[in-house]
Image (cartoon, rainbow, N blue to C red; front, side):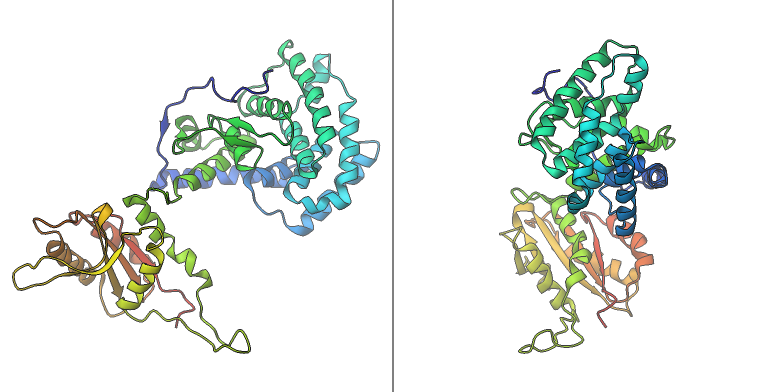
Length: 421
């Protein structure tokens, strides 16, 4: 095994851009998630692996009970590689368990490193991809450098024997074995560089066991999308890996590039406004002795425009507001916000409860004809709408209608938070 090689470098997949604007894909992802979550009610190793891979929080009482049972099993005569690995995943999920379970885990690792696999039966017993991944995760969780090096040498011998036996695991299991071998062949302080060619590669990067060496924007392998759309997984482990890979790659694709923000980045940033309002100031009583209770109300279009300036100005230095445009006959239009470098005009609307969506579409349609007349320095209009009435059931139709207007891009609707009354 060559420890410095880039895992996945021999694979060549056609890649396609990420997109969740697809109802079929959304339904498929829900089905894949259901299959992955079956691991949570399976054996301890499968359960711990599922929570670790998906990066989900294992409830405290379940974590405490499972760790105690695994420690008892490892300390007893019925210890197994599955128990050691499951405890390793738990240590990777919660490093605080090191105080109560660390010693038991290292005892289990020492027992495991004393085993050898020369016959096919012993190889079947020892060469378990999920289990070895769990041991690797646990050793890194407790930062046991010496046992990490011993495990790397022991695993390399097993892996070499595996190549000369009829036992050849395939799919995600083989991918995990290769990754475990490559990661354990270098020191704990070094970082394995991988190309994101398989779901296992992506999960190792997502959980901090490796780094991506891809300099370009991350795309998702078409093979992964094809598996997700087929829905029917023979192994729930593959479902968990694929779901994690998709979520991680999707998250990367949705990040705003602050060095060179694009038109799409404006839309991405504005669509995240509802999440940012989670900590919006709306006091029922004062928070400190020397302050007063504050309610930062957004009562009209000017308030919303000021808020958008605060959101966009740090990312777009050339943002300007209240810009007068060339006259159209007797009309002298004034743009709410503009980003000249993107040739973009942002139209800010306050959708009051007594205004119908039809009226709103008409208003924006009229604005487009005024703002983007012949000779205008701007090419696109992005409407951003504050919905006072929280009419979320109408958003899809409203956005679809606005998108049909010439030169309108990425319409965004922000529902007024429920606490803002």
